Length: 134
Ligand code: CO
Image (cartoon, rainbow, N blue to C red; front, side, top):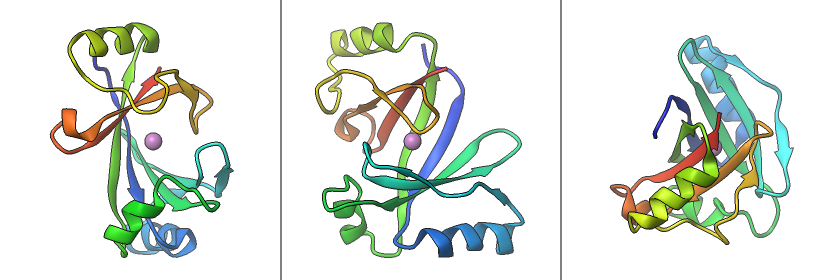
């Protein structure tokens, strides 16, 4: 079921500084910031030859990454995103295996315009997992 690693996401307190760190220190190509009000984040993507890094900054009062940044004030790895062919089939399989889907269990449209779901970190080795329909 699990496919390619689509991206690794890092929550950061200052997106401009984070993007500049990847540009200047690592020589990376970094996209322009995109506000995702439905997800409570502003995002840039670092393009790598084999995957992407998603840098996330809180957006709005109820950002889902605000509590994470309180615990990790300098930023930290927030989630891994794996591709799946059929997100509804993946969700049904995971629920049947006892995994918990965050939120109402319905896929939302993610930062790449494709359906995504998040899986409870306690079910996946302490790591928040995003599934994206490829
Ligand atoms: Co993501």
